[in-house]
Image (tube, rainbow, N blue to C red):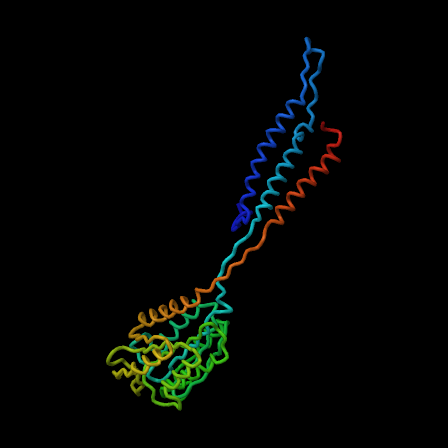
Length: 334
């Protein structure tokens, strides 16, 4: 019954009063029979069959309406309440900044179609699965800048994510600058949890802020950093444009796992290594689960009194009975 869906009763003891219903009904039947007299006659031919009285169908309207009013009144006295519980992950959710390396080495094709595009596609899937979080995007190479500030408008974010490409900034790998810019985007955040996901395929080669200095800044600002080293082990195929078309060279993979691990440890995050598309996807799924676990602890409960509709129904039924008795059926029923 939709009327009682999600309903609890504060005073369930009042339901014992429902025992009055069969008692009142029994008394009414007994009284009705006692009030009926008997008539004995020797011949019935002289008596024509009485016309059917349509009012006879309604002769019990009074007891029906009164009993219904009693039932709804008892329900009102039992204090029905709607009980709701929910998680408010919008106002106390997570602010996330994804800081991604777009340096030339990200064009290596050990991930398909290459590291940069694989990172973009999988990150976009991650964004789509977190509709209630504010997410921003920072890109870095030889320097860093904010591609998209923190936003809940993920359609805009995804479009801007899709537009990033190698060559947008001077080449190089400024991991410290990328992290510092991402942390700065979270400076004014009052979110319950602040996170940076830092993805790179190399080691810090330029920039005015060392990676571990940026990590200390993140720690002070209570920003947790998940670092991802993307690239296979050993050598990776790298496309090189020549007069004869694109040719591939095997280039060494030089991820500074020591620094990335320290950044994660200092800030309370975790370091991951993605050697192929599937592992990178699993890493984002793991981060997704870790951060969801941190916001799922806050629940809100609210009870709303729902007795008034039942009380009004009881009054309405009694009013209908009174009006019928004094208008439509006045003098018609005895």
